[in-house]
Amino acid sequence: MVMTVFGPGCARCRETESLVRNVVQELGLAIEVIKVSDFKAMMACGVMSTPALALDGKVLCTGWVPDKAEVVRWLRNAGECQAESAGASGSACGCRS
Image 1 (cartoon, rainbow, N blue to C red):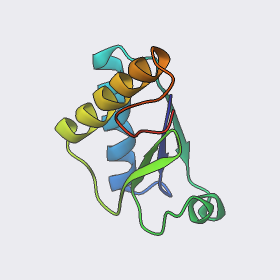
Image 2 (cartoon, rainbow, N blue to C red; image 1 turned 120 degrees about the vertical axis):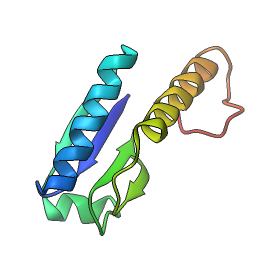
Image 3 (cartoon, rainbow, N blue to C red; image 1 turned 45 degrees about the horizontal axis):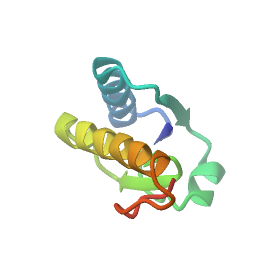
């Protein structure tokens, strides 16, 4: 899985990136965290306000810093969906696998 942090480098964007990296580390997840600061790349992903987060290409939030509980929930749900889809032909939770 890949968590993408979109933002030009402002304080809120740095705060969001730090939060995501800390949560990934605390949960011990094998998730790659990447930072995208190129405006054309952001717009190509549908991001018009920052900070923004996407998990495996699905935009989760734009224009605000999520709290830790939200990031934990998104990552745990994604992990459950990934495990679920690995054991079945289709994912019942509706996530993209």
